[in-house]
Image 1 (cartoon, rainbow, N blue to C red):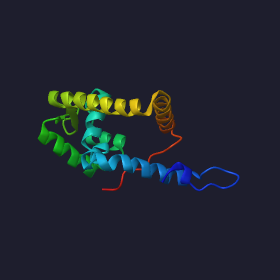
Image 2 (cartoon, rainbow, N blue to C red; image 1 turned 30 degrees about the vertical axis):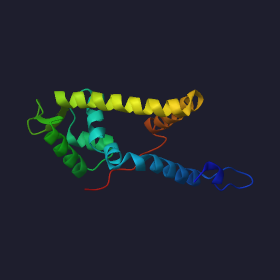
Image 3 (spheres, rainbow, N blue to C red; image 1 turned 180 degrees about the vertical axis):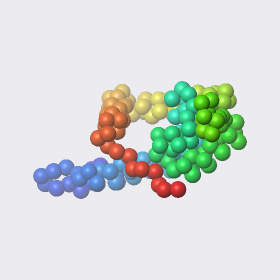
Image 4 (tube, one colour; image 1 turned 90 degrees about the vertical axis):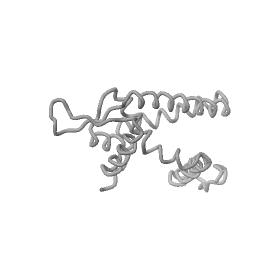
Length: 162
């Protein structure tokens, strides 16, 4: 649906729900050609890898689930897959051997660096195609959304129950 096709009233612009539906349609249109791997990675393996890299230390599986808004069962499956690939390892907490921590392996660190480079290259091409004014505006708006989420103005739904 094109923004010009969005229903409007005489006195006001499009309703937030209409704009949300249009935005979802556009985002879906971007993701469909990218394939299943990209969609799965948004809340999957790459999200865990990037979180571990950003926090610069180990995390517990529970901390990962909370930070990424995923169920503990989903995190367990992701961690198994990442361990099989040699990208993360589980280690016992040095202060409490009953607790498990997850950290990136050296190979995992290299993969995160490669993924970041690929993302910057891809997004850079998108921004270049948009042109400087629209690219700058896109970055500004996404930054504003992030600020609203971080400030608690926009809340994310809780993860689904296990």
